[in-house]
Image (cartoon, rainbow, N blue to C red; front, side, top):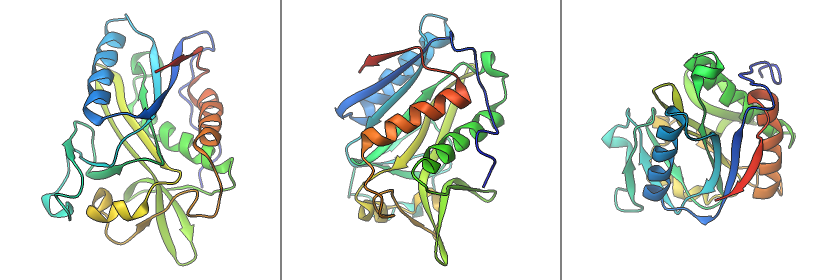
Length: 229
């Protein structure tokens, strides 16, 4: 496991980061359109950096490296092509998605460091619930050891446009894990998926959000204000 809070892209606490949590399930096309507009606004200097927490209805997304054979059940849920890196992922109720819109020009301009910081954010947040999340050099995401196997508990996929980031992370709190069977998640057949509740932890979405916000502060800088979404 990486050293806790070892990777930082922190700005001064006075720099504004809007921290928002959406109510209900946000349709994927609506979220993409809103994120696209906000990223353009950040690039023009008209909008603050933003972290947007939400849940989606059940759906699959296809990243830029998605392979057709990894869509096992094409008609099960809607499938959306997306500009983020990676392959097929599932989103649905019980999974916390965090779309992270930050200006990397202000944070060192290092995309690799940003991805590492996202991983550390997830790892530190899981540690608050006594879950040891780990990186793997040969696969994206955050993993947990379970006896003789490893399961994925969080996914990471980003895109950067004009040095502004979008997309982000997803952490499985209590999704229907059977929904992942319609795809080969991230093209990895040898390992499964898990969630905080599947690990026996009665964690709520609100519990996770509190931990996400506290660890975001340490790694990226304190959100200046909350806004409803």
